[in-house]
Image (tube, rainbow, N blue to C red; front, side, top):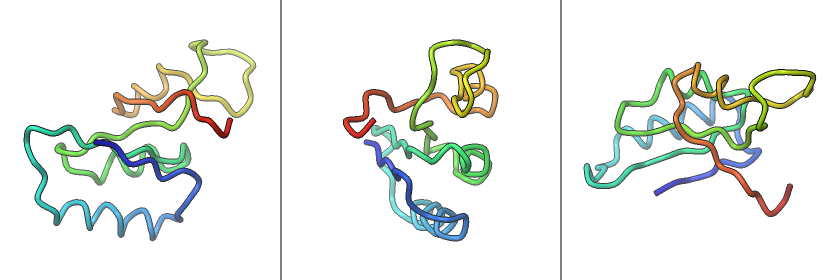
Length: 91
C-alpha cells in the first residue's frame, strides 16, 4: 500500500508523518511505501524503519545528462530508495 505526499509538507511535517507511521501496527504481509518529494528523499530514507519503503515521485529515463531538475533511477537507487511513482495524471 502506498501513500504519495505530492508537493506537501515541510521537513517538520515530514518528520511527524514518519513518527506516526512508526507507531502504527504494520502488517508484515503488506509492503508500505511513501512517495516523497525529491528534496526529502534522502532524509526520509534515513529516518524510516526498514518496514517502510521510500519512493521517488518521478524519474527521468537517462542515467545522466543535461536534464535540469530531473533525477535518474541510478540517483534514486544511490540513496537507498527502491521505488518510484510514474505516470502522474497532473504531469
